[in-house]
Image (cartoon, rainbow, N blue to C red; front, side, top):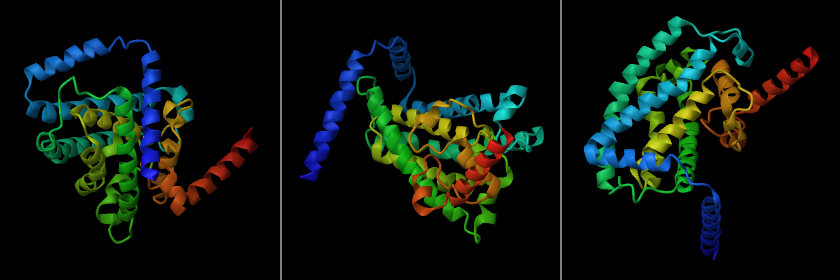
Length: 293
């Protein structure tokens, strides 16, 4: 009975979204995107698309999303939005971070990306334009991937903070007490694999088209670079997402090496009380701000 009710609710929600979608004006980018997609399919093999296409998408988007935060350090006006104002970025740290990123991206992540083609072949994941899901289904599946990854990240991240293993793996990521966007994937190779597994679980369960791989990569990079940015920017559209953790939430974790273990949402930290110190800190800061007004 409950199952039938759930199906009915989801069907109604789907019909409602389809109706809203029908009222929206045609997307002017759809036709160029369709032509570009079909050009890619006609000129490259599935292996090239799944492997080198995925690598290019990841590298281009990663450093593109890091660019605003990188530029903020040269803009005096943006300094008031930096969370840890007493710990500015340094060229030495950024260069060290960049070198480790290149190693992780090409020596750890690339071999994993090479398995993408075999995954899509084994599960018959389509590449063609005709079966590409609508934007709202893609968004829903990305949200599902985010919930799965966030759950995995919370428990495994918290485990990596255990005193018996912290210094061997996760300590590398905490080398920079004041995080910056490019540092999002700065980590020990084992951590890249352990926490990165959460990224692939959602794909394995929810992927119905190769475009989801790239959509989920995009969403995940936007989120992780944002929370590591070190800046709390007003009117950040990501903060409109219910239960979104945000940069201040994760910055506190880097500042104190404890609590706020989730990657994207706040519910696991709330359920297990691992955000209590963060909440107390926020209350203290609010009182300080009131006194200075």
